[in-house]
Length: 468
Image (cartoon, helix red, strand yellow):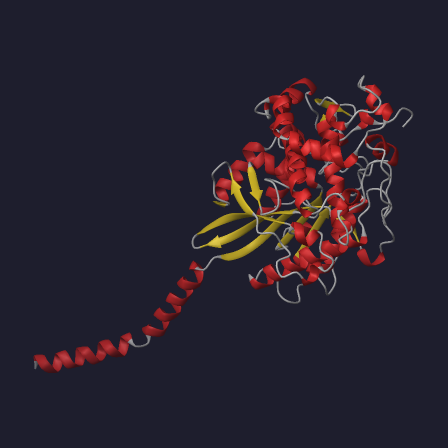
């Protein structure tokens, strides 16, 4: 009798257990799927693409007696090659987002939301990247009706102000050994730029009580707040050399068939002098008081986009959101968050034309994380005559948060870090929504007054020849 009961019990157990097995298998599969990291959203801050120099011809002629090359685009405008390079970089990023399941092959226009600064070069960059991400067509991009755009230029717009004396001192404190130390550290690069440009304009030399045949390296450098208190910069020899290097990189990218800088700057030379440009640019733009005033509004918008809480609700359901500004905007936001990056061939924190700082929201098991990425063309690709055919067109940037931190952080820690860095008094209370621009019906983009001319992140109004 006990044996019969045992047999019946075993059969009953098997009968009731068998239907449960598929459910257990499905549950295990679901748990395994949850354990696989999944990309939920990307919020990116993109720099405008390759464009003609923003400085006036008179200002450029004050820096050297050499004849400048003729650009195929008007001052400050995105060039055709610049648009092509933008298409290439965002085509590569589209492949990434397709592979990670963030975008479907035939994504709807609502999948990508783009908010651009209202300069010509940023709007043209927005058009190019939308064409790459949404080849089937897009809804266009959003821009502010206000100029300067308070999201990208809150100080110039008057929404936030610099404390002039405190800001200048803060920039100097950001240099471990002051301006003399910066001059000494980059003396070789400054001398190289000096040799490339040759003699400066005699009038520029006499303004500094220097002989009329002076060189840039002889012009003393200083930290100043210019343009009625709206621009912090290093002026003098270091500042001019940094601006010149910025222009040489643009030439290097625009004309792949020849070296830049009157045939004197090949890839090796560019690598050497770019360190000066990056150092002078970042020592100002990453300084906390500068970055806080100029970057708080934009960082606040990036945080809102990541949380699906944009004032412009049209972007809150999009898995890809892109803000298109300039390298200044990227440096300001990165400075506030203490984000750094580097790739082979570039100095630390370099921002090549079209560079992209991306914040990726991931689901990793039970928690959400933010992975910080930086994307840009490799230096060789910028100078390649066939960038679309390059196997590795994007440089492999290593990103870190803080001095030794990882580039991946829990979303709560990222949000806490961002909120602590934002200056609340620099946030706009305006309820004016950006206007959408239909790319298909948009005519040629023209520069207008206050459209970012003479704006390369250095500023040199004090260097203008008299009468400018």
